[in-house]
Image (cartoon, rainbow, N blue to C red; front, side, top):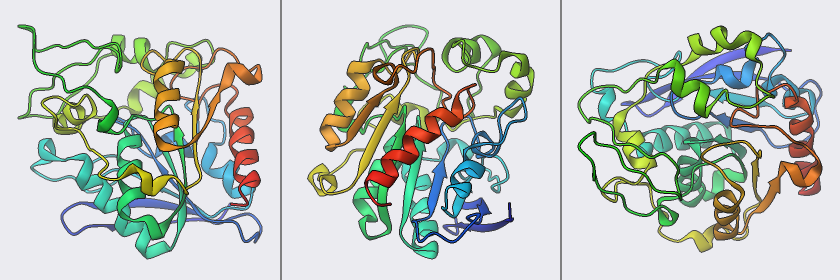
Amino acid sequence: MQCRYIYSGTTEHPIYVDCLKALESSGKWPIVMLHGGFHNGSAYLSTPDGRNGWADEFARRGHDVYVMDWPGHGRSPSFADFAKLSMLDVGRSLGVLLSEIGPAIVFAHSAGGPIAWWVAENYRAFVKAVVGIAPGAPANLVPVLEIENSDNSVTNSTVGNAFVSAPDCPAYVDRDFILKFWANSPRFPHQAFESYVRSIGHESPRILNERFNIGASGLYLKNHEKLKDLPILVITGELDPRHPREVDGAVAQFLGADFIWLPDLGIRGNGHMLMIEDNHLEIASQIGCWLDSKVL
């Protein structure tokens, strides 16, 4: 598979992007893959146990694929004020990439969801479709949360185990957190857990607080009706602690999206990291069929 890389993004927040050419020319739209919090684009490039990732799979299916690292993540340049990085900063950098490569389909995982919804609204001419993989909701659907406890934690069933991050330094997660929220399913490649842990980095506390809409800081859509004519898919597994059926179903309904709850297709046991679990190609096939049905 031919692979190269480029740098894109804004001057303040440049991004590193892996570029995989389609195996054969097909006329299909390119795909940009957006990772979630604490992660980087490697989650799409390969699995922790060494299997080819979704980037290769969708290039095989005829799409040019662009896998970006958020600013300050992975191989994207770091900067001194990382703790101030916002979802809007990531969205603007993604918008620059889209304007440079032309219209594309955006895949967005987890905390990449609110960023993708904002980009779809504000860079509409450059977004052909969005595939939300257990995606975070736009702030329109997330209740405003305030600090309530002495340990700075908050809990709300609509976002699940929300927490407040100290604003002055990068946030980190420990092994227990990783096991509880990202590696909890039987589909996760547990034999490669240590490799996966080594891929997890730091995160901007501002982005985390935006994700949980602490103090109304989340990324809101001003006019979500603009997305009603945009093909959108939300796809979720049954064992994802923060993404029960009713939550992601509500996101899909709000956005006028199609919703795949994997158990409805007889696909059981998946958690949050759909792109690296042991049936990741089966899930990619479902997404590919949806893209084909939309002639994308």
